[in-house]
Length: 306
Ligand SMILES: [Fe+2]
Image (tube, rainbow, N blue to C red):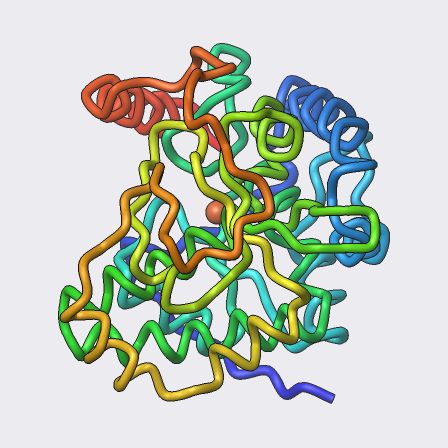
C-alpha cells in the first residue's frame, strides 16, 4: 500500500487537466494517433509496456482522464501524475520523479504538427510514458533515477550531463532484449510513428548492449532519430545499476572522453552494427527550425487551450 504525499509545484509550473474543455477535434486527434501507433507497436513494444496499456485501460475513443489514470497508477506502484504546462527545470523534474510524480502536459498537438513536436504533448506523455509507470520494477527504477538526479544537480554540470544521458538512452530511447529479439520500451520511440519502425528495422542505427558507464559517456542529438540504441537485459538490471552510488562513477568518467552518438567503442558488445547513414524521415529539423517550431507551438497553445 502506498501513501500519498502531495507535492507543491511553483505557481508558474502548476497546471491541471480540464477534461471537459477538450474539443471533438482534440479527441479525434487522440483517436487518430492512438489507433495508428497502437497498430505499429503491437509487435514492436515489449510485453511489459503492452500490459501497462491494458492495465491503464487506454482506448482510442477518448482522451484519457488523468484523475482516473493517476488512481490506477497509485494503487499499482505509488506513482501520480503532476500536470505541468510546459518543459520544467531539471531540478523540479528530478525532485518530482524522486517523489513518484510524473510531470505530464495535458494539451494535445494540432493537425499541422501531427508527426513531430519539439516539445512533448499529452500523447507522448500518456502513450509513451504512462504504461510503464504501472510496472513495479520500472516504477522503482524511475524513482531511484529521480533521487540520483537530485544528487547530480547538487554535484555539478558534468554529473547532470551524465545522468541526463542515462534518462535519454533508457526512459526515452531504450530497447530491451527478449526471446523474440530487441523490443521497444523508450517513450520517445513508442510515441513516434517513424522511429518505432526505424529503431528496430532500419540498418542505420547501432544496437549496443546496455552498460551504465558507456551510456553516461555517450552524447546525443534531440533533433534526429538516434544512431545508437542501448539494449537492456531487463528492467531489474537497470534498477540494480541505478541503486549504486554514482559518485565514484562520475569521478572516473570525468577523466574519460565522451563517445559520439554515431560511434562504436572497442569495448562495446554490439548487437547490430549500424551503417549510421541516412534519415528515413525528413520531418526532423535543424536546431534553429526546432526553436522556431517550439515558439510557434507555445504561442498557439497559449492562444487556444487546452
Ligand atoms: Fe518523454
